[in-house]
Image 1: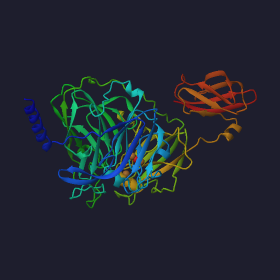
Image 2: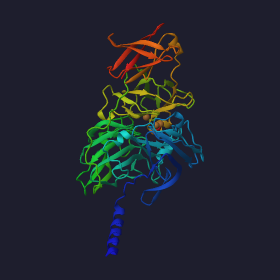
Image 3: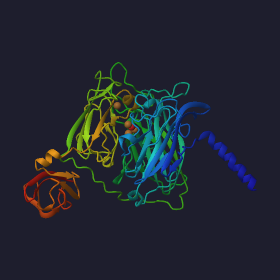
Image 4: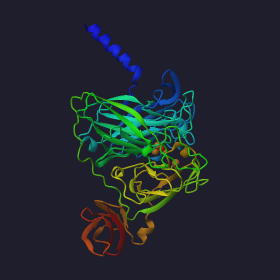
Length: 563
Ligand code: C2O
Ligand code: CU
Ligand code: CU
């Protein structure tokens, strides 16, 4: 009897495998030391055909690295590619020397072992090669993996977090396959989509409860507009670099290359049903790759066979709930405190094409990337507002290394609710579209090694739509101190504001804080030691304030911003 049941199970399983591929879940690695070997291999993406691919610790993609905020991790990378590579930890707040940019090459056969403290908020990040001029080549062949950061703030919320069961990473990648089913290193006419490395249309089993999907658009070129076949409402809970304040409910979600989103889907009571996740390319705004491109005249509008169409990406087959399921969508998540733009230094970057209608030759501020040229410097701790303007015919996903940013506006309007968290990729809409972001680099100044900013369409990036900047140490304040100026940090400040003056001052002083209308909002006597003192700003409303410190011999003054 037992034997018969086993036989039936085997026969059913065999029957199923012919028609249904399952979406594989990448292995996960936890701890503080991780070993990655990047290597060539072959993968059976199309039945019976071996496609040449690149993977970390395997033939395609790579293990998911699960990191904990506050821990110091070491990542040992061994390069078996026979070519130079780098591994960029996309989205992590780390020093330029650990970033895996084109400035941290790993030569063929060599090892690289960056070690750093995880400072990031719980979210979904990823890793991929970034050698200048070869990023498309290595990423499109399959070199990419997930990074999941966990922290206490996220752990305190009732969210699904059993990896591969109710918390599932899904990387969606457009690719170009030649007639021989090999991957073509040219992304302009992409003709297929893979989900976790298998062909679109595969099945993912998920339990009948609230599930969390970590979506990554790991494509080199094209956008996704995700949605379910029956218009099922889902909730976005996180963006690139952290959770949102509250879940944002939606039925469609656009992700650019490089961008991530965490969504909750409520499958409660749906056991036995199937659900189809689809690409709604026909709904992408014009000029977004994967949708309808601008008409260039002469028929060269760079449209691939699946562009501007809707098709199935994967089927979700709903199974029995787990023993301890999450069954509610939380009402609130975290409370984000976006950087204030008051007093920030403005900076602008313009995207152009040459000739103007070109769909392949792009520039940032009129320049192509040059490894030897630093485009600008940003002072550590200073807030900047960057305005990006896109004077080309297509959308470009702008990505910034080293730290997340906050979105101020998109085409002059406040960002949508799902863009209000920390981000590191943002689409600059075509045809004079513009975005504004607030940027601040608090840590990791480096006199020599820059951070990158670039378009995350990999052929654009390889072709020089990239720049780099140094984060410089906070400016020496000698001159300010001679002129009786106060130096503040952090500035903007939300709670305790520290100030510094002539370091020979150690005495009781009077401190006055005056608001923009000239009202004294604080007058207090405080003790200054070696020129350093502090005041509490928690009760002050947002804005900029003048401060006067009266010592026995001098009056010092300065301006700080409360946020
Ligand atoms: Cu994900 Cu500079 O890249
Ligand atoms: Cu990056
Ligand atoms: Cu671009």
